[in-house]
Length: 434
Image (cartoon, rainbow, N blue to C red):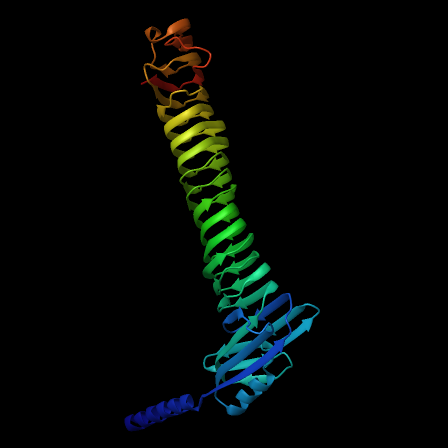
């Protein structure tokens, strides 16, 4: 039995090797040309899509199919059935190189292709279609591909539309707008005008745009510069360069690393932002970690369990704040917070600051004011610790009785233009001594 088993194994191995040698590599090319058109739509499958400049002012496409076939006749059937649907309607050219395949199923080593016309083809493997389209100056270009490359190396004057699924995308400079929908894709885009970009689980770098709108989930995005940036975002990673205009986001669970910006409007939920310099910021936030270097006015419509760190700010205002932490190294003009169990720390008050106003419960305010700074204070508090004594002020009114404090006074001959401090607190801790 043993010798027979060895003989059977050898025969089986030779049969498998023989079947491999029976695979025949085949290829076929379809070419066609059109007069120029201002709008071109390209839909491609099963291989790279390349769009390049035309040298003679016409539109040319070349589709090359390559594959391996176990049977030459089956390969010939595929070549005969292979087609590219292409035509010109008015000033528009449509190119569809989907081969006319209705279904392509592979089970183990066996493959079966059903063409749109019902033709059945078996034994095909390593099927690939390479499509190159050469175009002159074009007003609008639409490209659509799945599971392979999209390369656009031609200028588009008004609008480039990109539909990508599990693709590698490379787009050079275009003069017009960019509309992109990409899933499970990666790649790079150079300069464009305005952008409307939808991403899902993709990783794409953008060089430069004017007004850019994102709708993104689970993606990694870099934008080196933009005039304005708007995003509806969910669990993304953004790296942003300079935003010269409005920075606007509605976000959950994302991180933003950014450089300079102008004004910002932010709706945040468990968002991390690290930024450099900006002007006015309006935001509504929960559970977020926010850090900027130098900003103008910061206005919270509401803050809930946030952490805010600023090196320098003109003013900080929060209409409603709960359980948040604020840390500001230098504050120039004003602080105004309706606060509940917050921790507010101001390291340095700049000379000429206008006002500090806290209405709160269970809040800690640390804001050291130098001994030579003039200010006026009006305070009403219960169960609140306060580090200024009666001797520290020129008193108008000072009541410290039981759990109640009422203080009105000034320091250093404060006038109308001096710093004004208003405190209305319950069970707070206030430290103002420098």
